[in-house]
Image 1 (cartoon, rainbow, N blue to C red):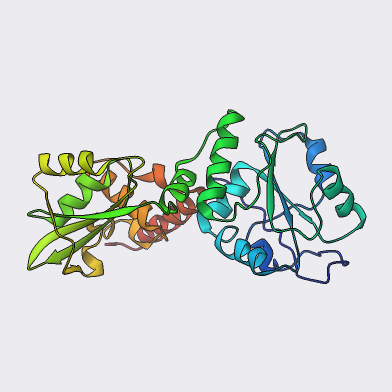
Image 2 (tube, rainbow, N blue to C red):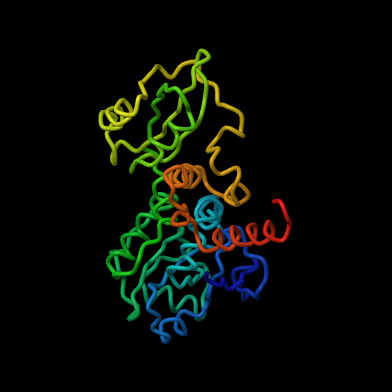
Length: 298
């Protein structure tokens, strides 16, 4: 397990320092460092996640904080796989000098630079990347280029934030089995147990760029799942969604829909499913398990 340093920043006027307190909305929930020179002098093995951000900022800046920097898996990946540093791009002084060093425009929308131990860009600078899918793609590319491991929970954050997904419905004799068989496939990001005209079906959300509809359909048919029209589908009760999780600590850990899908597939296949969890989720799992062990019969 990894410990997380709980250091956050407050929202004040642009000419005031940011004391340790609650993050302003532009910074999400990430525990930021603020001394870029000190971070670079440490020459950490992890790349630096350098955010140039306007604080207080416009809707784009606050939206970036809400949707990217507060995304539970992305925020944890930023802290675990990178060294997060924030520089306000609308102030003078030392932060203004850092901004000028990187030729960043003042009063600009959020820009993320991913740096190596020498303070050089791991990837070419890019802007207008303000979605979880776009930022996670950069993070994965930077880690791969730096020959650092890419955790599965970061790949999940990237996959399930892909806007180019589509949905297909398959009928089978047992939607629990369908969820397990189809949820295990690369490119499938979510499965939902449902009913259609009284029959059990599974609604499958997938990434066509990773698995073509024809390949998904062929695999489904090989496992006695036949495609049907998507009209009239009604989701099954919550207790029937990824049912294999219900009797395990996974059922009490906050997981994303794709994580639930993948863990359910692993458990059904006899695997432990832990590979899909982040360090914080692993710790939560252990806490649930320990509490259950303290209570006889649970």
